[in-house]
Length: 98
Figure (spheres, rainbow, N blue to C red):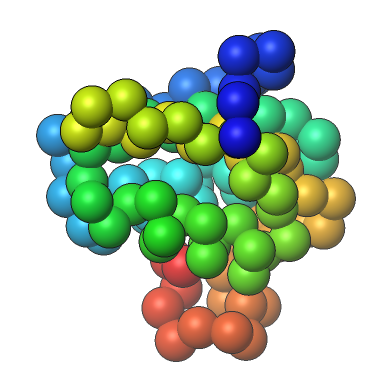
């Protein structure tokens, strides 16, 4: 999936951070965004790609782009339309942050 044509409203640089920090920060940023906005996430954590993809799917967001560049990944996520900013209402996880 190429993400060169889409311009994100926000970029989250998680390079140098390790699990679970990238997915936690992605959740916080997505909760702050309006439906339809794009979030770009940069990471070099090997677990971040799958963790963030699962987070997006669980919360109703869409990963619309993914690029690998050497040891880094770049994901582009479109914020879904549902209001998921209250983590206590997320019944799919025991953690209030995921």
